[in-house]
Image (cartoon, rainbow, N blue to C red; front, side, top):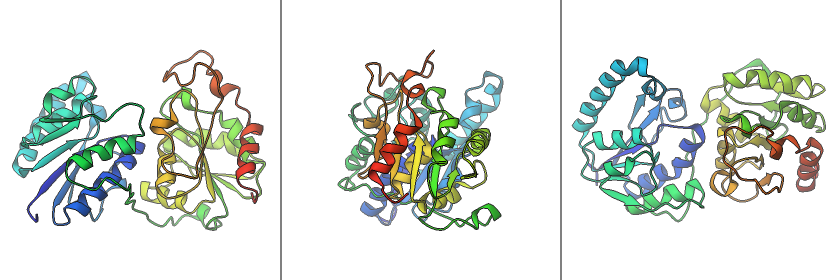
Length: 334
């Protein structure tokens, strides 16, 4: 099917895009001669740019679309995007995001087959021609692969075709493969963040250095971790490209992380993950695959999925001693 054209709509977030990569792989394997395009949010395109399985990226300013002050420019962008997508004549358009915005983009493609989830929010289902039951108490990767199966791909194995690139920075020169820890202290929700001080005190307990990763907005967290690490932490937050971040994580001994995007890169790259979970459910968004450990307190209110909480008791009372003992119980040589 050399002229078969597929559109994947999955703009964000970092972890969600990583979770979607097995769909890309499965479709490419099922239709090796097909043309695959991907709609991605500005700021995340670096993860997929130059990917051999993707012929074209459509980059959208999704954050701008939310602002009423940008309504005029947003309308122009959506109109232009719709016209361009229509000209592509896609055979199938797949919405893996499941929101109104992504469903509208899928509809703008004018593909005769527009596929999304029955559970899509904000009324997105009205824009699909085919609705797939994904389920709620299921990991996101397995949920996405249900759509891959509907599209005729083999959904039996989740393969993550990540891209990597070398880091050519002074701070990375001393790092040796398998001889450092990666820590990811950030998270989109404040309620998902274990205290930076705890990450620092944890780093001080290990015999190999810890490298703090994240976006530019996580730099201050990294500095706090360094301050409490007794010289055992390096702050690399905001200092890598997304492909460089993937390389840094891939070569780590293991990762300690909140429920955040870099955690999913680690799981996809086959790195052992120790994931600290508070209000969210690891059944849905935990590290995918085997060999990982989810650490959290067993209290009645977990998981609550709240972005705001007056106490955040689930993480507040999770000590770095407990996390350290859990890791040492699994890994004796660190």
